[in-house]
Image (cartoon, rainbow, N blue to C red):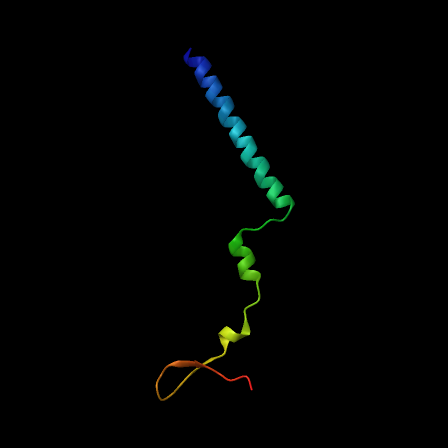
Length: 66
């Protein structure tokens, strides 16, 4: 009986591994990327990079675009 349970567990593990590998291959085929990878490729909003330190107060303030 132990051999039967071991064989069933081995087959179930192999099937789960097969499904996981198949899913990863299909993700690579469609060039899906994780969320952090797509966020890194997104262009940065220029409004966030226009900060200048005020020499009097030492605080950062946005520069005027005018």
